[in-house]
Image (cartoon, rainbow, N blue to C red; front, side):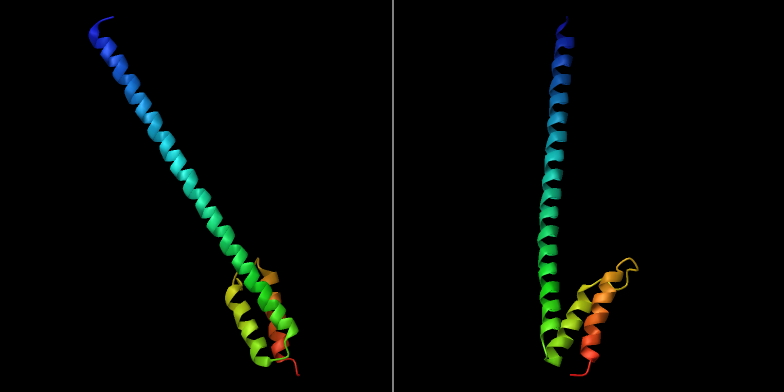
Length: 104
């Protein structure tokens, strides 16, 4: 082997190693960002569910029309009422709204 072919082989190995390291680094950074995003979404969904539960409990247990109206508005703002597939959301908000309209 000549000196230039050894140098070319070594250079190719170094470049290949660097590219492999960069691809691995990129994959690791991307995976970590996705994990953090998933964690954040999970935390936000948990807070959203807790708030919805609290509003439903308030709506069902209160006799105060003001609190009942606040619960209805809170639910209406948090639920996806425009999405046709979310029929349960619309029904829940409608039931709480009917409690607001019910005579006391």
